[in-house]
Image (cartoon, rainbow, N blue to C red; front, side, top):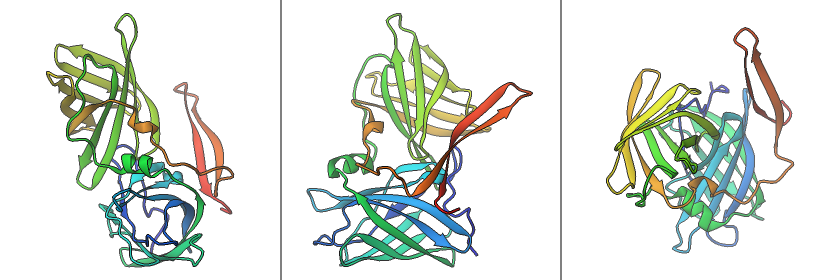
Length: 291
């Protein structure tokens, strides 16, 4: 029996998913932005998918699950076979898979979702267009080498890998006129943006970024040409190898075109307060429509 924990996206170092799709490249091609949900007796999980065909004829795409903080995660192994569409999720227990078919007018994609022996229905409706160049850039693998540069100011992108967990981390570092460094961290695949880097330490080629929320840090060594920092990510008593590479432009700015309001899910601003500690936590709660 499946429950609402299916496809759960946890905190940093939480579960991550990779997806593949099949669809045709004729008039009913699935290029575009799609909104819908996975549905069953115990679950109604909103999802969105963006698909585009490159100039070389290959397919690229992204998937988002707003209610679980997963956003613009690159799809993989996209193939075309008539009007039939299939998604598989590598790295998720139970090997989640989608098997569906485009409607005759290519405006709806629906079928079966399976995971670990259970089965649910899924349905997606076309909601807009995508820019193939942006989707391809977002879905492409991390560059093998970073760009050369001086100092730490700029954009640094890396992939944190621990077993089936794969998270793209984007560090944005700024230096003011006095040379003081400040920065933020985005976990691109979880939709966590603007996490403040509380402390940045530099000693010759040694670099350390410390975060208070989450309680984590990154320590590494800057290469001689300034193109990468090789080190380790430390959180919850764990130490995981992580290399971040200097980027010429901000990778986090590549986004699909759409969706537009009204969204197919409900949004609610929520605030939790810990009066004793004098702290608070605010965010946006997103739930499927009708729940």
